[in-house]
Image: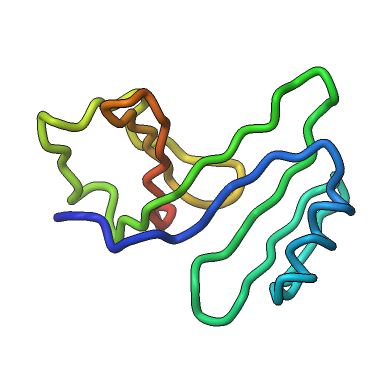
Length: 114
């Protein structure tokens, strides 16, 4: 089994409000916001953007998430370095983190187990 393309872009920011307004000015619509300075925006049928505010002393990161339909059926090729195997997340998915040859981290997102 392989991935099914890009599902989401996860962004960290120092200012949730400004970041959300930036993406809204580019045509993204707010799907929901949380009570802890984060939220999800989408533009059409493309991948969603999830933005989370982090403290000023932390460098904002960005990670692209690739869609995996079934974590249990997914097996990595030896060319893919697994940083963390699939684990349940607090936001209702299962996530694996892999590293590309240049050191960038990528998330593989699968539905939570039923």
